[in-house]
Length: 91
Ligand SMILES: [Cu+2]
Image 1 (spheres, rainbow, N blue to C red):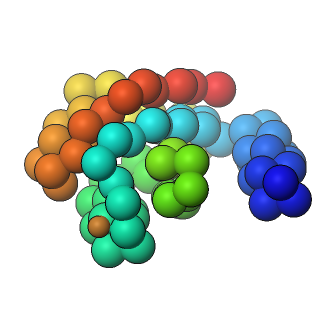
Image 2: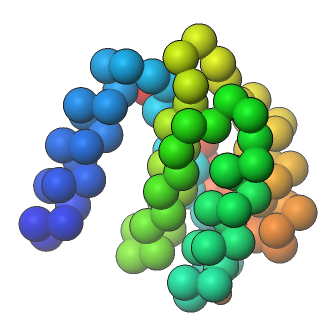
């Protein structure tokens, strides 16, 4: 519970400076999955920071100022890694 509140606070404070994309992924079960996904997204130029939450199966992507990652790009990366995108939410 405490963790969730902290994540929410972080998301809130960061969204003022750059784009924040939250991707819900299915099939992600262990820390190896999480690391793999984190690495894949980190390779995209527009991505500033990636956080993967295994408990909630959410991937939080923070983009650089004025840059964006398209839904297609997000979908393709997750599929390449062997998982499925459930939903994509932007702030
Ligand atoms: Cu795994």
